[in-house]
Amino acid sequence: MKTALIPSIVIASALAAPIAHADTLRLLTWGGYAPEEVIAKFEAETGHTVEVTTSNNEEMIAKLRATNGGGFDLAQPSQDRITSAQEEFGIYKPIDMARVNAGQFIPSMLSATAGNTTFDGEVYGLPHVWGTSGLVVDTAKAGNVQDYADLCDASLAGKVSYRLKRPTLIGFAYSMDLDPFAAYGDPAAYQAILDKVEAKLTDCKANVKTYWGGGDEIKNLLRSGEVVASMAWDTGGWQLNADNPDITFVAPKAGALGWIDTFVLPARGRADDAAYDWINFVMRPDIAAMITNTAGNFTAAVDGDAGVSADLKARYQGSFDQAAIDNIKWYPPVPAGLEAMEGATLDRINAAK
Image: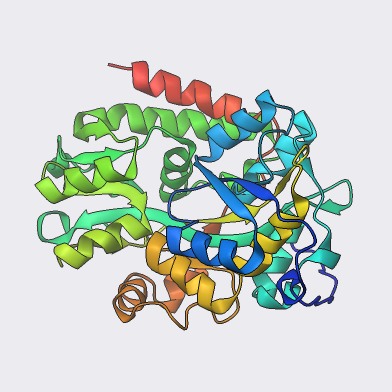
């Protein structure tokens, strides 16, 4: 991953001093990232109030684009969705590192995220929650599934599911010995990769029970046995494993796809004090563990795993040995215009008979 140096400034958290103005923090985030117990503790300690809107990457950008960066004070898109959105729409404002307790962040993740969210010399994102997508498999019924392309094996006809979203295109490309991230800067080369993946996924349609849209949907399909192998997030696999030891997350041979959800400041946010207070608060190890135990994913907080449940740690270690960790394909920033190409490919796959 591209990296950038982070100023080695560690400022005491704003929580150490009385809050001058109690504001309402309008937080645009993912489900599970702002548990009620965390909000209550934050409100009690700071005097701020928190209003949460849950969303996903596409919707976050659409909401902020529609308001020219207004309506929210803190948002949490993935790190690969920041520089291109800023270049096209100008919906964020830079992070003031002097207001961030940088010592609470794992240094390598702070540095990597800075490199991937720097635009015109300014850093726009801080790392928060990270995880991967790969395979969730009922190993008793589909133990041969070890890579994305294995979902197209004839033995799994009608028993497979994945999303018609860009991670599926990228994962299948890697399993076909292609390197989509290396082609990000070359639209013609990237289109050639998309064309090959389109042919593969069109041929694979007979295996697809349904294209899932939400986490609960795919978990229910796997629980019921209607689907025995899928492309999905690691946390979903670990949650299912708690109830059925045969179902678990498998890191694909081609590499799990790694994401980092960030903190960004919307351009027209009006409660920066509350936003920075929230960032410094949730990166405390004790609060980070509360978020991991709720969301299922680990955070970029130093010692944030200390209070995580033993069961979750064991499931993580069962899916990821060191080789699988080293093989994670971390999403780089998405160049402007790339998602339009991917969208057209996904539309053709969906329409194909």
